Image (cartoon, rainbow, N blue to C red; front, side, top):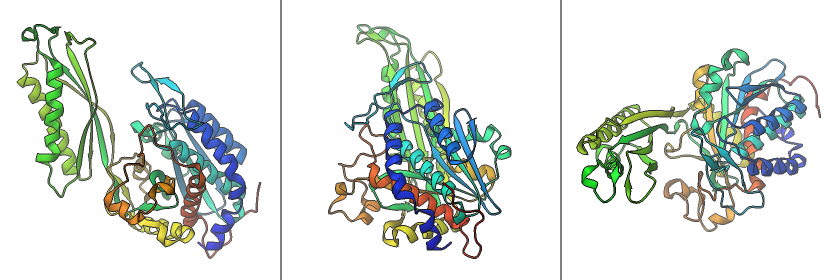
Length: 435
C-alpha cells in the first residue's frame, strides 16, 4: 500500500461529508431496536444500490450485505452494526431521538442510539461510496456487512442464514467502534481486545400476601435483595486480583403495590470476563448464589435461570492488527494511534465473522467526543486513568459523538485499513474512476 493510493482513495471525501452528516442526524433521530432495523436497513440497501453494489437484504433477519467485485485480489469484509438501545435520550440535540418501540417482551420503551451504531452505519456507507467511486485505486472484492442486533448478539443470525455460502469468503474481517475518547484518536491492541459477555434472566419464586403479615409469605423482594448483594462477592472475594470479571444486575422487577408482597421477582444479570476459566467459574458462582439464597429463604419453588445471550471474547489477530495500526497511523500520524494497555470489559459479536470464516479479524476504537472536553488532559493518561466524569460513555442517555470530525475520521480509518489489503504497491488496480 502506498500513501498516494490512500490519498486518492480519500480524494472526494470532503465533498461527501455534508451529505454524510445529514444521514447521521437522520439515523440518530430514528433509532430502531435489535432485529427491528427495517427503516435503517432500507436506507442502507438503497444507498448501496445507487453506489453500484450487489445488495442482499434480510440476511439474519434485518441485515444487509453489499458486495463490490473489482477484479482479482483479496476479499475484505467491512462491518457496521445498526441497532439502538431502549434508552431515553437526554442529549438535548436538535436531532435527538423521540422514538419509541415495543420490545421483545411487549413493553413500549424509548429508543436511542446510545452506543454510536448510527455513526458506524454512516462511516461504512461513506467508505462504500468512496470505494465505488474510486475503483481505479484498488482491486479485489469488498463485502460490506450491515449487521442487525449487535446489542443482543445478532452476528450468529447472519452466519446461520447461510452467510458463508452466499457471499465471497473474506480473507480478513475489519470493524470499528466509536468511543468516548477525543475525536481524532484511534486505539486497539493485538490479542484479546474486548471481553466475553453472558446475560442471564433469573426468576425468583416466593409466596405472596399482604404487606402487613409478611410472616405468612416468602418475600421474593427480600430474596432478590440478598441475591444482588451476595453477587457482589464473586468479584471481590472469588476472583483473583490479577484476573478480570464484572458482574452487573442491570434490572430488578417485583411487585405492583407497596402493601402487596408479590409471588415473584425478576433479575437480569450480566457477566463480563476475559479468561475462559474465569468465565466458567463466575457463571457457576452466579447460579450457586441464586439457588442458595432461594433455599435460604425457603422458596416454594426453585429459581428459573435462563441464558439470554452470549458474546465470545473478541480477539485481534496479531500480524493483521499491526498492519491495520500501521495503515491508520500512516494517515493520522503515529501520535494519534494507541495500543490499548489491557482488554476492554465491553463486549462485541464482531469476532463471530472471523471465527466462522477461519480468517484474521481486527477491531479498533476511534474517538468521537468533543476534544474540548479533554482540555489540559494528556490523551495517554486516559488509557490508565479512565474518562473524566464530564464525558458521557456508551449506553449513557447523554452519549452522542460529535459529527465533525468524527464521521470523516471513521470513514478514513475504514478506508486506510482496507487499503492495506486492497491497494498493493506493486500492481495497478483494474478499471477506472466512476461516479
